[in-house]
Length: 74
Image 1 (cartoon, rainbow, N blue to C red):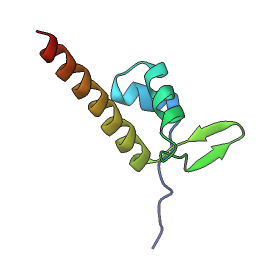
Image 2: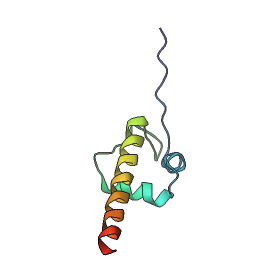
Image 3: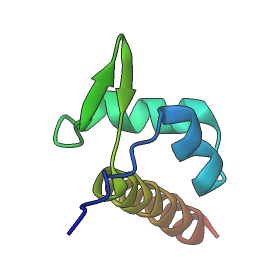
Image 4: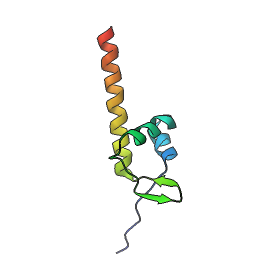
């Protein structure tokens, strides 16, 4: 039985897959120490699917809070 290696992606690929600007992903990763890279390739951080899901969840939470504040103002 051959195990396939995990799919690891860069920060830029995460931003592209989630359809958000790179700076939003970078800020999430900088301010959420629980989201850690799975590996490094030199200085490049590589993230697995679990980390991508965590970034997506954080972005969704930020957007939900932002929408709630807008609704409160209206």
